[in-house]
Image (cartoon, rainbow, N blue to C red):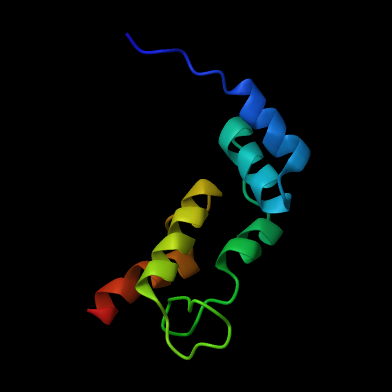
Amino acid sequence: MRAAVNYAKPIEFIRANGDTRHRESLGVLLESRQPSDELIQSVLGDQRTDGGWSVSSHDDVSSVNQTLWRLTLAEEAGIDAGHERVRGACDFPRQAQ
């Protein structure tokens, strides 16, 4: 038998203590809101011309791990998979092979 999960406390914690991205992502998940331009920029900002992201702003190469992390954040934020920058990010790991 599986125990019931009480989501009320973690949701309240994020609402009270989460940063803007976490609070807005929660609204997207729970209330079916569309992600704002600010949320999209916070998740997809600093994307490199090859479609990936580097580990730090000082690196000259994109990282597959960092790019996959950003795609995970994009999904959590409710950013559409058809978004131009998401499509570019999906192409990057294939090109990096």
